[in-house]
Image (tube, rainbow, N blue to C red; front, side, top):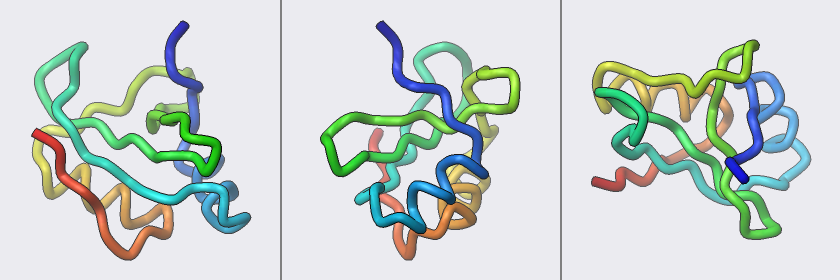
Length: 80
């Protein structure tokens, strides 16, 4: 089973409810680029997707980090 699909808007709502504890930018396993994952307080990871449920893949770390910060996080962990 894959990770839950979550748009930036849905992740922002969870962040405001203090249900997300960490944002991680890491290389995409599906394609070239970087993805944003958010760690839920329950321990699971939620990947940032578009409205169609497709994993958002960014061309560089800076773009991915910027999108993680827009969710509300003050800092982002880079995993490579």
